[in-house]
Image (cartoon, rainbow, N blue to C red; front, side, top):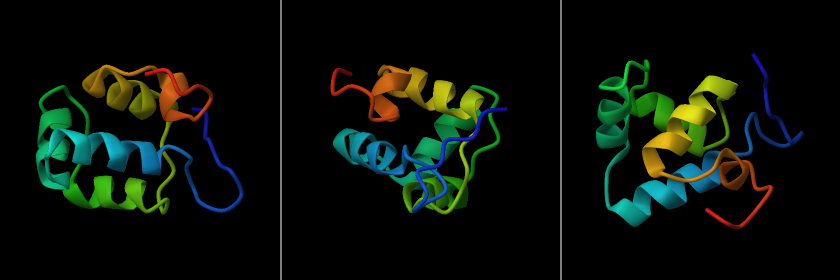
Length: 83
């Protein structure tokens, strides 16, 4: 498992996840439920903690979130602005 950490929070994808979720107009609970249908163990609390930077996000979850939103992992990680 690879852990992404910028020294200030436990992940660097939280802001992008929140931005993408809000752009779709869905709640944290809805996002968690949709990721659950794809076989991942997300709850609304999980999404909240990711968005707040309070939870480490393993590489396989970054891939799952990127796939759900149809963006690249590089976009989530802030490597590129290109979705």
